Image 1 (cartoon, rainbow, N blue to C red):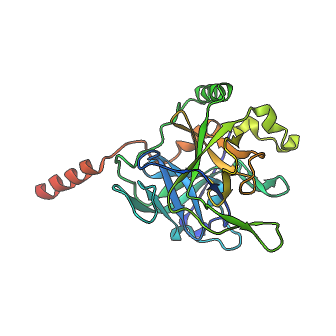
Image 2: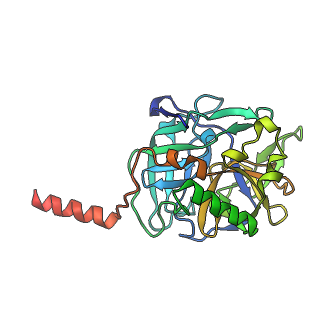
Image 3: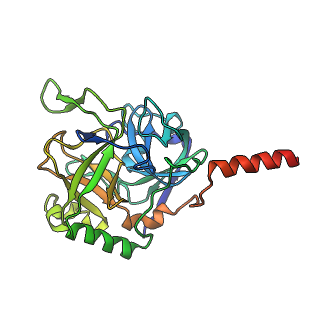
Length: 298
């Protein structure tokens, strides 16, 4: 049973590090209309659960830490893949508050480098409008058993999936050769191909007490050499057969393809995703028409 913690807008700050796509191709306009860009002093990706609610990695939304910004300084961009030349249907919103699971444990695994139950919700100050380039994510099922069964078929069929984010296209090591420094982030959403691994091989990467596969953690491997998730874009979705299945939690150093990237499947958190908000779709034209009619009536 999950417990939930609602944190108000006044007390929240953002993590300074996340994951990003290194290499890959540019996403087409409208190809992934549910993907949004989250930006403050750091940036992450997320997916629209509803037009007023974004799911992303919890460590993008957690309290405290060095160089973190208040949540009311963060904005969410939807309806565009290009952050410099916004396409038709682009909209911007602020975050009003966030919601985390009571089981979230920051830096509790892998020598303090990886979080447990790393999933969170950002509740927006005002809903986005529905449009051809701006839609909520279409899960394969809102039933946990059906969702998990569908994922097992994805793995069994060795389906090629897609990871994505507004990530750097180049990097360098610091002077000590111990850390990656971004040198050229992409202003356009980028996409790479990945292959899911089975749970048994994923479990072997962690000590038994740190194994999270029973809670939906999975591992995926890059299909092409030098195309990986890299520093900066946690929370981005994993899309298989046109459906989002998981969000990015952690990954290897940029360009390392032999080590897997870690994602968290939604199936164990479906009840959490339905908390607060509505799945009602309000097209922009309908809202404007209603406002016009009401103004004339008054």
